[in-house]
Image (cartoon, rainbow, N blue to C red; front, side, top):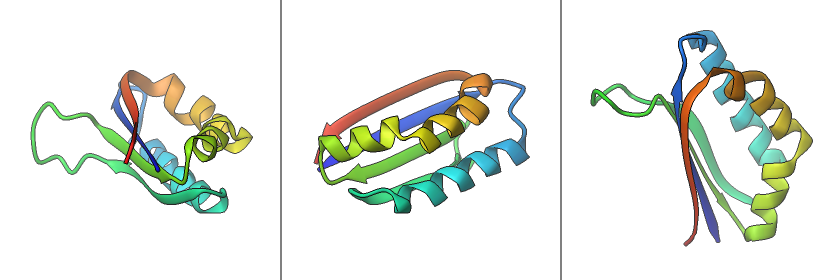
Length: 97
């Protein structure tokens, strides 16, 4: 299994409504894709100053499942509309579990 983790810090252009839409669209898309075992996306709980603003954690059956998700047209559209234009910084990792 492959775990995919992404952390975002937003630029000032990201509104709360846009962040909620980003989470909703990602969380709605994931269950429609084969090979996605678990998937959650959402904003930081605000418990510790200096954290990233948003996280995505997804578990995939295998590398091919992860790549299908990564390259899926709907996923790329969500990124192009909501995250890429509003991202100040981003960190990601994929690892085997």
